[in-house]
Length: 116
Length: 112
Image (cartoon, rainbow over all chains, first blue to last red; front, top):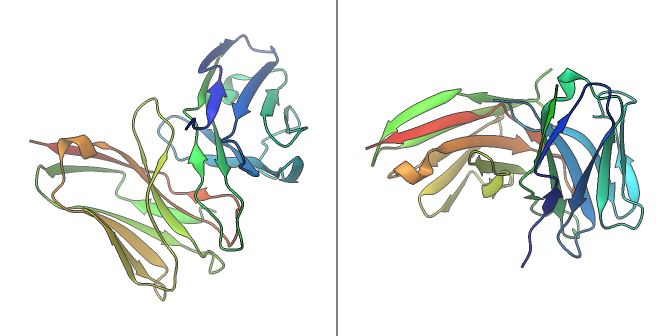
């Protein structure tokens, strides 16, 4: 079956430009997570959704970052007025429904954003 | 404050040897401890995971050892192979489908 799909795979943006990164989770997965991975570092949490509800956005680094999942499936991470420090790989992960203990998170291949 | 501390940063192991990567955590509410493997240009993939009610879990050549009192867990890769060369991340999270907190990663190189 298809895994988590992210697009585009690579994005080069000029400083100040707005970008939109898309995540198609595995069908039926209710939980969706966004992480930011800087070069040579571990992924860092940005925000997550349970269906269409955004449960936690505490990891978003500034108000230039915005995420949505309006129909509880596809999600978009938008970055306004990009800065050089936004250059990173943005990872999306999804998880199937959990009865309590939690389930495995499946990651996409990521979108590598380079701000020039 | 880093919630999950991982060491070493890099590791070189001979083919057939044992690779050992260590992690320590602070938050006693964590109850799920996975290890992820990541190849260049790919997303992290779950390797093996453990919950705090057991002290060890083995899957093939991969073993997690968990010490709840010390708040430490480690990954052992037996009979390491060149194909195991990748970056490994430990992680932890609270119960339920909550966000993962990752270590900074260990770059493993297995040489023939």
